[in-house]
Image (cartoon, rainbow, N blue to C red; front, side, top):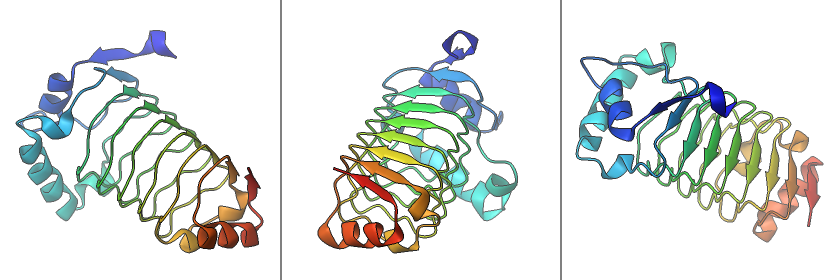
Length: 195
């Protein structure tokens, strides 16, 4: 996959997202490693723009796409980014802590060593996702979909609304951390849990 990717610097990515360009399709990009999006001087401008677009329904009808993209080390904590489409993307060492990722759609993606602590993943589509060593402490999963997803060495302690996750029984968890209450609830669904 990597040889078909188009490299883009973090600054260029941000510039293309914002007016006057307002690009949405970043499929098959290889984003600059360790880009600190949330630390960029234009981050607040991006937040305001994304909130306006969401209020107008434009992120739902025309979401930002990272389909089959490769993202390593992106720091995007506190980002407001609903409806993000990451079908088949590869994310490593990403920080989406405290992010608002309503209807985050990462079907058939691979996410490793991610931080989603306190993120809002309500109605997220995580179907057929492979997750490794990713942290979801206090993450909201209200009506998220875990159909055929695999979580290895992830941390779901204090995750919120796991009981409302769709297709939880079709997910698999290996060497994953839960509080006792969460573990018992997941075991009752029939999901695979391997210690």
